[in-house]
Image 1: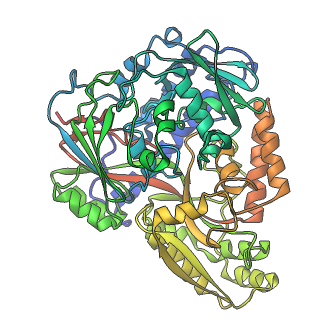
Image 2: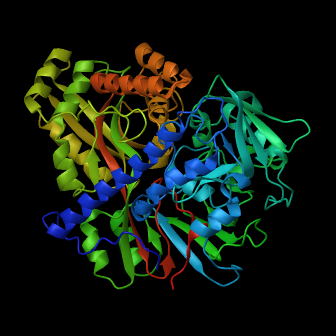
Image 3: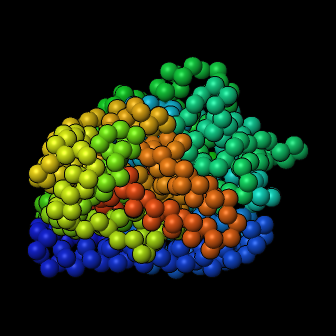
Length: 596
């Protein structure tokens, strides 16, 4: 079994071992992210248009691998600037196949043995179109079949995938050299630069025949074009895009242009045609997705012979399935079940610090949340320390701004809101909304203890003398669809949601979730829009960081959310699999192998 964080005998938050382990988890997680961020700061001092040797970046980022068992894959810490502006196999001595085989692949030389694996999540995708969703559970499933031009390994390094080289040509233009060899599974057609350019345009352009909810995930990107005479694609941005490589290392699953255009949207939503290690065998919408190993994969075939994804919204059901041997990996193990799982000889518990912030969005265009005083009151009403301690049992951290520590742009001077019910009641009176009744919409089973967090928040608000609050349980996919349509008027006024940001850059949370045209926005402010626009156009790293810090301070003051917690990823797995979780919440089945 590969080394990983083993959380043992966690029965109560009063257990000294529990306190020791969770404290160590937080400290090591911070150490990983800070080491990664510091490495980026070091190399990003170069000129914005300079080509920087990627060996320097990899060497510096390698300091973070000491905590890999805790944090897994990382991402660019300061918006990457041009830290990864150029990369070739010669620059670091590794090809994508070499890097992935060393760090993440199963180690099975042929991948010909029978080794079925089942993974149980809290939610299942309601579409198989890789560009028609905005949630991690769907993305986890998609990434088994579809691949991006570049990726990140578990140690946080950007590695080759469908591109073999990437570099900045000029501000607003980067170039990806496209690999020869990968084929699409259904058609057996070779991957082409035209497929890559079409994929980018399908995501960011509305005139390609499809409006993707993922456009914001490639923030700043305006389109792509094939380079004449080269097997390459230029990606265009509106001015210098300082995080473009960090974005492409996480997003943009490449689809085949002809296959996607020749089939209607319902067919694309029910079938898959990627270049990845697994090919679709069966799809039952919202129930199960089954993959077979792709034997003609361009790298070594996976060790897993058949891969099945199932869902169970209730965490207790997932835990029972794991103990019974009905599944191999489960997500979001509730803290109270950790001790029970560790009593079993057949399973292990693994925890990592994630890149996800959990919050209660408040639609600022609708009463009573149109009042800044009322929004601040809701923050003062919530005892966040109690939620971390009693609900999450220390598997979480308090937040007071949209950006997690130590992401690029985090403001050290901003503290979480203190619990102050008297101040909350005073502000409610000041807002003119005393006596109002509000409803908190929440998914169930998507995030760690999501329903319990929502119930705790609602109870604390309801304890105020001049506000009443209740909880409404929602299907996650339905709620997410309402929230990610880019229309601030269609979603519920008050809701619990999470936002993961694997670029480690403040803009990639604030831009989609709080700017006026953000796909998930609950807030509209010219001042915040201006700060983010200016930050996205800033060339100097220090200037950009200051602007993002101002945006975080402004967001805290305006209180568009009830700032809740950073989520920790707590996984359970059977001892028959060799697997380590990643901090970006992706589950890479290609990295799973039989236990020794």
